[in-house]
Length: 409
Image 1 (cartoon, rainbow, N blue to C red):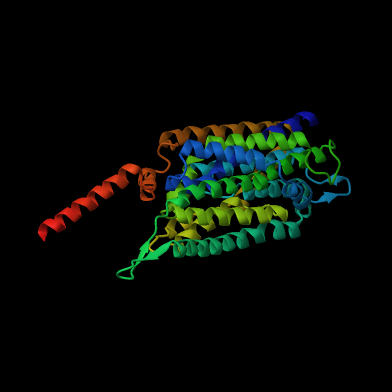
Image 2: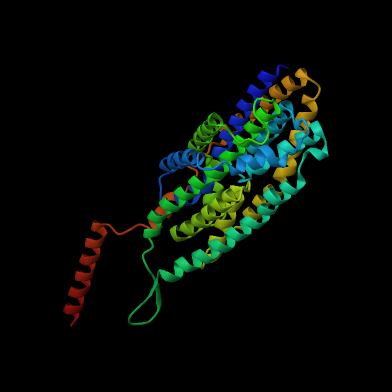
């Protein structure tokens, strides 16, 4: 197959993966504010899309980790060919869509790494993967970052509930303060997560496109993504974010725990801090794992909250399966593609058929902005700030009570 055509196919598939990454990970930033009623669903995904777009232009450190780190550069350049990258991307896209269909917030990042590693091993052998980079930049952060995010979210939630309590002057009992302000604070914190997501996840597709350009000889070894690659990936992930991954938003928003505004604010700030730190260090972090850890930590931190450990275990199982499952899919696609142009064509046809099947199957049980979080009205009402009407009603009730007391005297 013509090299230019193969490179074009890889770039197109990479941008489609970026699109799936966008709607797969919308929940990381916007599930909790939607669940608490802080932001309306459509407004939430629009805001996240804009901030993902902006964040994609702020850093390229993670992209460099992928384009020149995980897959070794041999004496003649990158050891993986455009055909193998195509196969790896195909495995990542299919796994992303399967987990989306199941409403499972798995890691798009690990799906990408798994697909590329499986394809690289088939195409260039086990020595083509730099396992030290894989361990330090991918695997260790996958365990450490969610644990840190969980701990920070737990402490932040306890602190938020502690400083917003007051004592009854007569009885001395602790009474909850009005916490409606956290609902507005969530707009800021969720926006910060969306911006951070753009700085980390959009870089991964930039790294893949840069990798294929280097492998095709169109770009020098060791260089980072050029501007058109950055712009294309930013637009693709923003478009995917705006599409909204409503199935995963439902899982993250209400599947792990019932989120209140103070919890949501704590979880989002913890998530953003972890992602931005990882981006600065060039770590290709799974933002989904961090966000899930933060939500669980916030649930543990609120007294009386229930963490649904069955859902948490299902999500954790998805984390463990993602990288090896995507690697197997990428390896299978690479094995077929290695037979020549016919194999690449079959890969493309099978991949398209699977994508269409998943999409049509998802229509049987549609999840959208109108039913992703069924108790959104109740959640919003739980933190509803008193309006003038309710205040006047309160004063009227107090006046009636006073009149009754005077009459009884």
